[in-house]
Image (cartoon, rainbow, N blue to C red; front, top):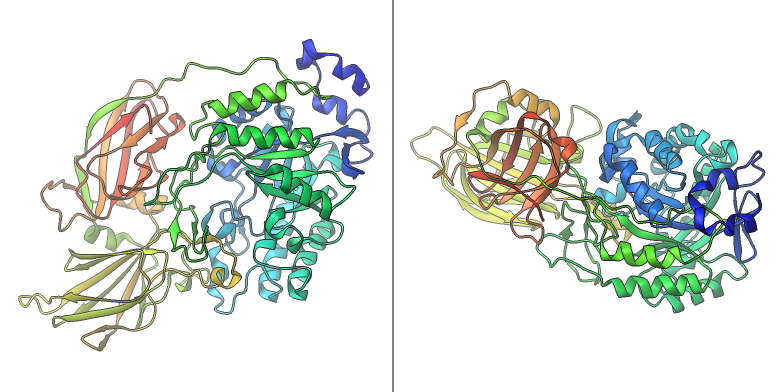
Length: 634
């Protein structure tokens, strides 16, 4: 069947398979740049792609989301691959559950879609540390995104494991879904391969490592043409553009810098992300459609970032500093990664979805597309006044924390042993004793929020401040010694900065001497409090207390609500009484909440609920959590 035959089947697109047409009987070539066009297996191909991150959406929901992409007349899925989640410690790789990349690739194939992989090593993605593993920071001299030998060795080990794992899914190897792969991510924003030999050598190392391991597909870089397109470029790697507006000019600059090559938009930003304490961002549909129409008029390929955003589960959210303005302070990203994308966080079609679908439906291409938009009657679980009846205070949690560290002065969480890889996420509790009142002085890294307690009683919050902190603490004269506790939360490591040196110092916690009235406090006990599944399981085995709704001075701890369901549906969890903390639903860490907003609820996929008895745990830092409720909207 030739492409003219396929084009003529406008009334019966569903009978024509992408793989049947492009793979056929023999694969002789992959995605190639031939003049101003792409070809796939020597047949003209235009990439119509949307980004969807498998690690932000439960595996049980992947297929429906990808099906919606196909129904929107796209032909390709694009995803990042997060190094920090797949290799939580050196040589310990995880490709199961939410991280089952093979299952995701096979789901893409099942839905008759192709796949673009963006494996990093740095991916940004509003993910903690830009997707880099925090154990790199155990090396005090670490220089990420550079030619620093220990960093390159770690990258090569990761790439070898990852790319061997997915090798067979390449288009040119087996007719598989993977048709292209990105080298690094927006490197031109912090480096310059044209002027800096180290930057150039680093990018060449990545390109050559991909090829040496066996990646045969088209390679590309991405940057914003009006800012730094060529600064991240290297020979034999296609340049692609990122932007949201001014598409005409951005594509013109791309064409000028890379003449007689296909125009490719690696990221057409459909919306934007939110930070805690800021406004909720929405991007009008008209802005996206204007840029998309310009792209199509130029016969360019594109990837809509994002098609669906999903959720920053657990503690995986990132943060920004010096962005969007050079003087912008540190701000951490919220749990919802809705992004004002084409599908909502919970997977519903939006106005943008319908507008994009309408435009692409009118574009006749040589592949099947269904004629109708997938619709469904979405119903949500609603339930008010779910009571919190049990409470486990911090003082009872401390004895069940494993891997306690003892040292003379505090150290950051990345430096903690006994394991050589430090602590990745969550909280770290620093504790010591003192005998007299005075001015407490300590040093703390940015990107943290701390709660100071004396004898388990709340004294002060230190809100996202770094450097030297001073406050008055009082010894209880009735006690031989008072206990000082400083509970530090890692709010998320910076995922984007125009200065690479900022990433090299993204450690979290206390550091250096802590003094009381000028005298050093020593003999510290440090407790890694990561709210892990193992910790939650241990907590279930000890005696809990009844909730004292009036005790706001000693309120840090786990709050438990149990309830029965006869049916399960998606929902949004909310409490008017919570302040700052984390929610665990039937053992799964959903992520953070914070009353400062803009996000006020947490999306709960129905796959995490069950018919019968359910349990929700809330780890709260600043108030007594009295009840919860499920509602039908964010």
